[in-house]
Length: 403
Image 1 (cartoon, one colour):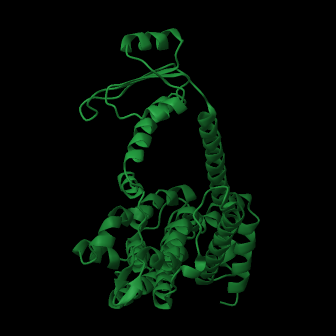
Image 2 (cartoon, one colour):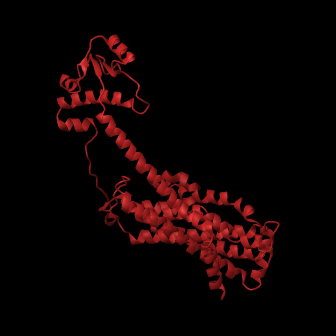
């Protein structure tokens, strides 16, 4: 194992020198920046268009059979009242009039009719907005402000929930432990491919024989796994720093919610549980992917298994509501304790607070044992599959050989 440091440094520096690593690492923050930029310019354009629309003046004629439109409001808009509906429609058609509104006698049974001159697909909506505003403004003037708020669904509410006699905010409670779920998803989705092919490169380059004459297979695999873990942490840092900078500097412009970090509850026990689940889950799937890469003769062959692993990892996300609302379900229990599906259910249930300490201990123990087994098998696969250039290493050959 004295060569472990050498392997670790070599794998780390070799990967950091690759353009593909930095392209992969920077692609996520670049995409996030692009999305934020689109949101910013979209909001800016929408606000400018709304302001311009407010300042636009257009001629209006109205026939109000309902009696629900205030004459004072019509006067402020310089709208004229007409009795002949067809004549007003003809004036709109000829371009003499911009808009004509017909309010029927019974608004509960008949529709308000709007006839207007076309001013473009996105600007035509202003005519109907004005027709609604005329009715709403008139109705608001006839009732007290409190009734108006109720009818417009603008009443503000303040809610407090309690759990075990203490104030409890479920959304804020899941933020701190939920970070590990997000990190696990990002790392596996963006870094899984590199884990899978980390052991096939030397085989494809036909240099594995020379490497194994000086370095033990176990040392090589462990060094690769440690380097993958550090590279994953580097990638997390590369992703988080731009996101944090954008949030701090452009939160107002992008209309992002203001998150008060001091108000986020910190539960050391739940955070510790999430951290342990995250570490052992990451080690488990690192061992699986590295082992598959070691058994396959080429990166292309190894890649065919990647989709299967992704189904096991992220398939449980389709049962999201089940994990939250029915934690005692047999299916939830099975997915939480089956090693290949356990990471997402355990992290999610711990984040929302329905994972008991006993279940957490069992889940962590299963993941820990599974990760040790996966890493051991990965070493064994590499030891006997490193020199296989033309075919995958079969399980029969693997377990018939002596360690």
